[in-house]
Length: 301
Image (cartoon, rainbow, N blue to C red; front, side, top):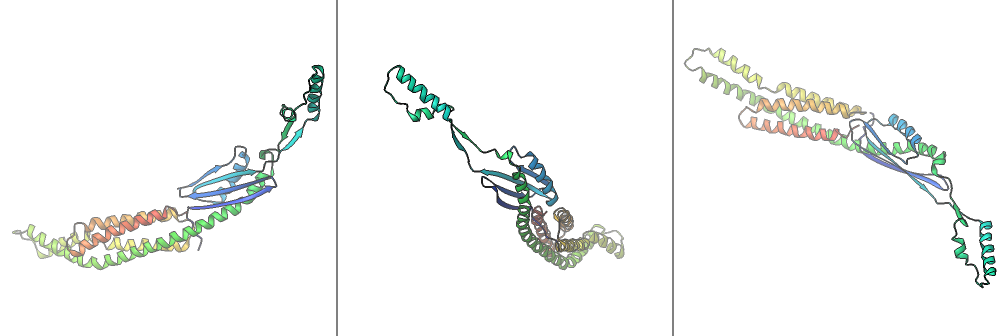
């Protein structure tokens, strides 16, 4: 059996490029009809984005996938002192004090604030470090695997719920089948009496009346719908046993189940009697159960 994945999951990872540079990756997935990739990367990571998109398209099939890359860089600036410029200012200060015979001494704090006397040289930006792209791509496979582990766990929960839904549908079908014969006979008798009333005073053979009543009763019989409902449920369970990508296929099968439920309701709505009312209730319960299952399969890959 192949694993069945939900389209809902989350995974994150953090990695170090060098002593001054690290990054964190986060990947979130929710349901979507197709594969919809949204990458949130720094503006200087265009080349990296192309590589990431190519890899993710190979590894993921469906879902709205959001990938966020955050760069973390340690500040590493060195303070440089322009000794020649500072010496020139001190010399000029001394000449000015001597020229005007002033006893003042130069203030070092003021001198260091003069533009150009001190400067900070920072390390190159991360866009200038080719190791970043390599490190991110190296971390991506493990992150996808971690995401798939979360999606597989969620998928197992969905499969368990879907199996329970199919079990309830089987129970409804069995009860429907048990009620069907009594309802069919009641409809047959009611139609025969009604036809007899309508043809009162007209010479019509009993055989003809029974034939017409049988035709009308047959049109309201739901045997074929019950058989098809059971067949669809068995097929659904077989698909769950097989595993793999089931989202679209199971959704289509549930549409077929819903069609059978609608037909059963339309055929039993005109019937009368206690059994008929219960069959109508069962038809409504079947439709509600199918709708719950459809909500679940929307999250399957």
